[in-house]
Length: 207
Image: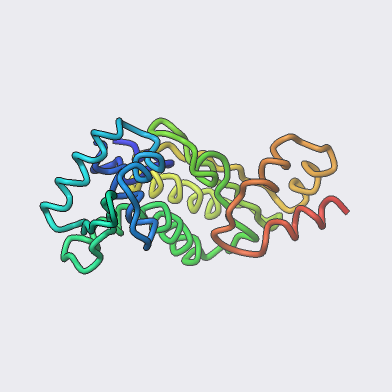
C-alpha cells in the first residue's frame, strides 16, 4: 500500500474522520463545525458534524457552547492523541528517516533534497517520491549501493516508488547554465534533508 504524500493520515484513516482529525491537530483554537468542514475540503457539513459528535463521544475532541454555536478543539490530553499526532506528522517522520540514513553513509553527498509532489505536499497515493542527490565527482560501486539502499528504504517506509536524480556538482552547474526546466522546480519546491543549502549551489552554479 502506497502512502498518500499529501495526506499521510489517509494511510490508516481514509475516511472523513481522518480529514477532521487532521484539521483539529493543526490548530490550537476552538473552531465551529462549519469551519472544520471548510478546512477539510471534503464531505458534507452534516457529515463533518456527525464525525465531530462521534469524536466527542470518544473523548478525542472537546465541545463547548458559545452562544448558538458549538466550538470544537482537540483533547491533546487523551491517551490516544499521540497516535493522531504521529499520523499527522508522518511526512516529517519520513524526512527524518531519510536524513538519518544519509547521515550514516560512508560516501558523503553534498546535498540530498526531496522535490516534486512530496515536497509540495500535493501528491496522491500513486505519486513517486523524487530525490535530488548532488555529490562530488567521485562515483563508484559503493556509491551506487548507497543509492540502491536509499530507494529500497523509501519503498519500505512508504510503499511509493523512489526516483533519484543523481548529479555531480559540475553536472548541476551544467543544468543551471542550460536553464533546464527542472532547476526552477528545485529552486521553488525542494526541501533539503541533508547537506548544504541547495539555493547556495543553485546560485553558485548560475554565477
